[in-house]
Image (cartoon, rainbow, N blue to C red; front, side):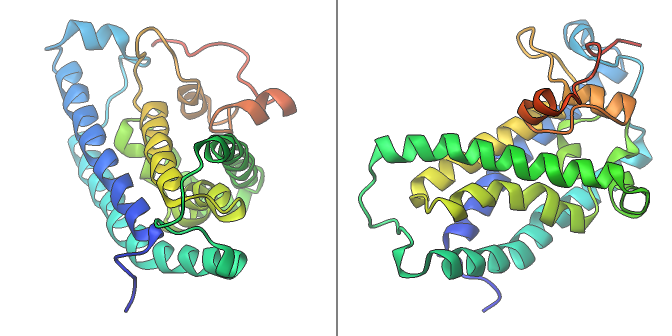
Length: 241
């Protein structure tokens, strides 16, 4: 069997898809309304109101995003990271049937955030620091200066597997989290990355990852904790043009 449909990794991937597709499709719909100037409210919230994805680019966006979410994540990452998970934790690995101790699991979620931030920042910064890696791998993700929610998984498959998915798996694998915690964390992670690439202010909040796509540098982390620590935060908030 290529992958086990009862495994935690499979369920995490399934949950990620259930969050990703509605959010990304809604994002494309809102982008279309703004491009046609049919929604002044959303247009006023758009961080780069003059930048839109063309119809041809939208097709490429959907195709590569679908390939990553439906093939790479299920058929490559699920069996790979599930095996790594079991190899590291062995017989001590928590199962769905084990007791859920919420005090411990809450602490683990905080550790997950730190692990994801370190993993994502490290890989992302390396993809920018190396001209070779940027040209042949990361440049794919920077095709659109003004991102949209679906663009969060628009990446070279190698980057998607190692730079996007693995940092999310890292915390649950290292800290032996209860499956329920893993499912919740994957929901939070997918919501976060869709929000970070949506291209709009949400209740007045500006996600600084838009600056990263606008300037092609700065804000390499997912929650920008590492950026503040290493001094790679963008010098100014996202500008509208």
